[in-house]
Length: 239
Ligand SMILES: [Zn+2]
Image (cartoon, rainbow, N blue to C red):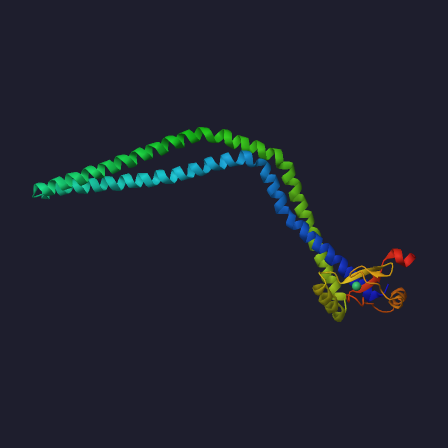
């Protein structure tokens, strides 16, 4: 085979492999989601309870702060008592004190309910955690296999990319540019086989003269239909 054509064909094969590996790598998160789906039934109740717990803890803190500030307010209102000069002022102050106390009672009540629910959750969480742990155990092998698959693909991809870079370093820059140009225009496929006298890129018949040139291998031959670089595949070489 013509040495330039050999390089072009190798480059094409590497790019096809790189593209396939890239595609395979993209499938990993989807596969991971499928595994997640298997433990969803035990994960969701746990997540829900954990969410509830953290929300309750926040609201309990907020209620505690609210109670404290209402207590402060009540103290301030009491301090105003001796300064009262009229009955109207007095009853207004009593009303405000009363309203503040009711508000504080409400906050305390809510805080208590939050505490009670939190205590109940302390009992509900361990079995949910246990169920989730069991569920994860069931898919542990799958997760491990997927991780190994991802590592293998990544390593292969890296190796092919390195190989491609080395090949590019050895190649004639003009031919490399030409390859890149054709590949960009032809959906990533710049080098194709001729099978039974037909270009496998555009499926147009290749003139016998060009097929003969391919046999001699003295120059690089391009398809007149799609401009892709042609090579003879083994079957037609023997035939
Ligand atoms: Zn063609």
